[in-house]
Image (tube, one colour):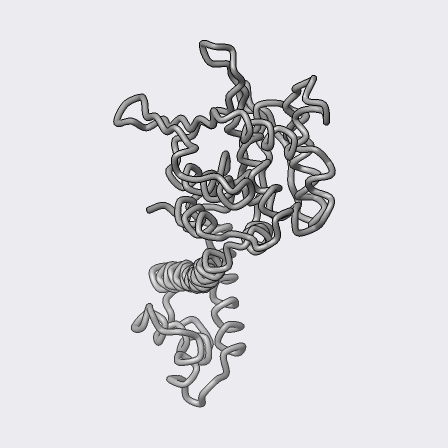
Amino acid sequence: MSFSSEVKEELGKRLDTARHCQIAEFAAIMAFCGKMRSDSGEEMQIEVMTENEVVLRKFILLAESIFEMEEHDFVIEHEGKKNSLIHVYIKEPVYVTKILMTLKWCDEQFTQIEPVFVHPILVQKECCKKAFIRGAYLAAGSISDPNKFYHYEIVCEYEEDAVQLQELLLYFELDAKVIQRKRNYIVYLKEGNNITDVLNLMGAVVSQMNLYNIMILKGMRNDVNRKVNCETANLNKTIEAAVKQIRDIEYLRDTVGLESLSDGLRQVAYVRLENPDMNLKDIGERLNPTVGKSGVNHRLRKISEMAEQLRGEA
């Protein structure tokens, strides 16, 4: 199961105790998955479409809790390949009326019906804002595999809906942005800290801890890689310097002879030729008298300068 699906499974089992929060979450599922339709007798019905069993279960759970509906009040049909698309119908007029009035999709006289993304009164409270975001994620959201990169998004059909959802996320100081992708508008978050925060406010605390663990492990791996890369780079520089030193010493040996060097330079030259992989500190300890690392480096630079001078004269 993907990380995104694990989050939805966790959220699908959560039910707020406050009725107003339940309504806010129910409103989110209706905003993304619900619509009005007429049957053959022109009776108004509510239809919810989803491909996710978690959304189906949560929709029914909320409807039963808010409107005291029972299992037989829902008509469920499957279609598509492997029955992937699920249709849920609410046909009983009394429940249709209750739902539309609760969501503010109609006026108090039930004379005008107009679905809205979310009526402001339903998300006045901070807890209701959180519940709506949770329902929106369940209905139309996803999170990328955090082992690869950090990305949270909710797909909206209309730009004004995306902006309204973005404002809810911005209320909680989350860096939410909107981008158009084909015919849809995507509300998204980047960065691990943003996503752990949104998991927390939606109530997915187990998934939040799992993400923290992934982030810690990734951080440790990145630190190790940085150290290895740094050590590798330093080692490469050391090897390149040693190779140049040996070439310069061999050039002097083959042209003027190492016996032409002063005693100090000659000692360093012989030790370096015999020990191409040895570091400067160990070379210095082989000399008589011993010389520190900076002293060895100074002598090798003198040898290189002499070799470059001879090459220039050749």
